[in-house]
Amino acid sequence: MLMFTTEFTQDQPCFTVALCDYPGLPDTERQRAEARYARTLARQLGGEPEVANALRTIEQLEDAPPEEITEEAKSIYQRWMKAARAAAEAGMQGLGGEEGCYFEVRRH
Image (cartoon, rainbow, N blue to C red):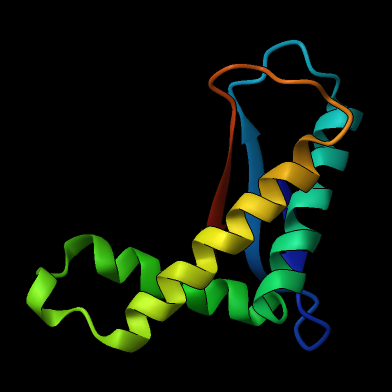
């Protein structure tokens, strides 16, 4: 699992990325895939702190009743989904496909 930090707080990671359920993938390839995913996600969302902010919103949406979901939250969710698709494509580049594998992102 790779940890990514902002340029402002080198000792505090904003988020971590882990490639899950891809058995037999060498560690160096896994780390490269996770780094490609993280870079693309951050670029798509406007920076590493924005990844953490978007992920916080996504987590809050999981428990929110539909009538309490704001237009801003819907917009963030749509941006997240677009960014996550682009990041997954970049992360898996050159690896081939392993059915069922996925990238897990956690904020810190």
